[in-house]
Length: 474
Image (cartoon, rainbow, N blue to C red):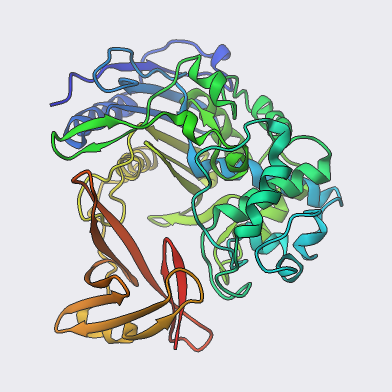
């Protein structure tokens, strides 16, 4: 059973925390905090931070709960969290500005911008572009970075030069949207080489412009201050379990894709910049690039420069989710309404198992916040799962030259089966063309592996996609 949740609320002024003033809490925000507070106990989430930009200005910032399970220190608006892949938008802004300045070419071979870095297949970077890296359509693999590597901010290039020789292209460029942290690591290096300064120093300009006074890529600095410990779920007790030391992930190679630590107050400043079209971060020309060659490229991915184009109940917006050892983060902006919301959580388990879409605590809180500040009545999310009678479209043999090897998908009555060299497991439906299968862990917990199917150019299922590889249908 979780202890009573602590609530610390700051109603902010225009930009940075130092400009804030304590004021009566808006009843809508108070209700959102109370709703979240109740669910934190239900979901076994130790701490949450929320920031809301309304009418283009920072209006509400709150800390809920505690920084570490079993300890009394409260989450405040200034408590640092890992924001994971939300970090990618800073990398995207740096690259966009370098392109507009004429120092990077989105359509040129990526090798032109990356110096001596090369992938497992010699010359592979000659056949893909920075735009494909930005939109996750390069075909590059997506696997975890080492938990430890050089932490010197000047070491990004040598670190990536060493790692990249193990990175393969899982698919040919431009054939499939596949989210890959490796692509953003290389984009960060491209920006660094183009601008002639360490990546973290370049990003600091963006942090300063948004009034993000405590945000940092330096984990050592963060740990000496006010930070929230990441947690996972201890299924034996139903309580949060503090994650392993985050110093194990102090790797400069992950800075561009997911390395930033930031508070709700920090992210409120970032939301304000996004709502105002990147003002203070990039030129109007660079922002226009984002909206044409970036997230608006719906024919490929709807993703670019660290932003995902999305719609919430008919309201077009920009979003990104972050997930990294013990933390979830999610940002959403609706520029037409001057609205932005950031949710930070120091836990990385879903609220239901097996997971379903929008089952992360960040997503549930975000949904409630968007409904609240868009003036919408909450509604049940409709399932997009295809009917069982359509599952025959997935059946077949899939092959990968990499770790996946051969995978057979079969249909046994109303159960879809996944078979590889390790055995046969049933797939549980997740969303329209996505499924999960359960994997028991040595610690008694259960992990879920995502399996998605994607169409090729002939409007038939061509690809089988998992977290550890991609296979093509025979």
